[in-house]
Length: 143
Image 1 (cartoon, rainbow, N blue to C red):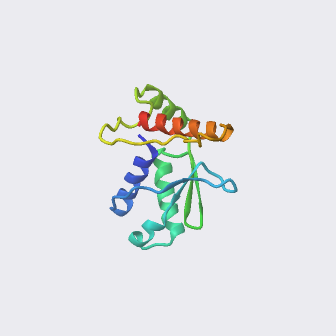
Image 2 (cartoon, rainbow, N blue to C red):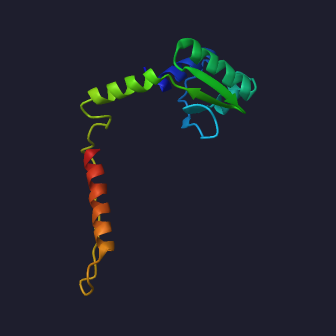
Image 3 (cartoon, rainbow, N blue to C red):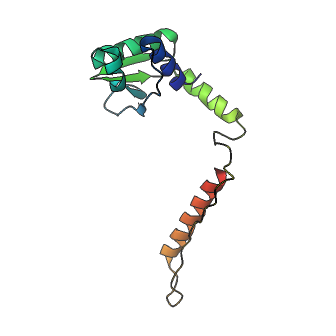
């Protein structure tokens, strides 16, 4: 089960609110792998941001969803167990789509490559634009 689903269930259990968690990568100066912004739940919980973060972190820790947590001014820094990463990689490698969504056959896109002036010589800048156009077209084709 993904961490987002675990967090959503914990929030639903604590505050009876359906919500999508706002997870961000933890800044380098703080300990943790991911940071949960708890300010959206403060109004519902009618508690301080630190208290809300402490409640959510304690319940996530008791469920085994995270290995550790710390609270910094309304932000809940979560440390993930390394087995979480391994299981994510295994599920990703077993997916035939490799994590990509199903192809969207509805839309058509126009990707414009470079169109150099025919009266001037070609240079490296034109190659750069050709490669960027090719890369964008490959990304769109994969999606």
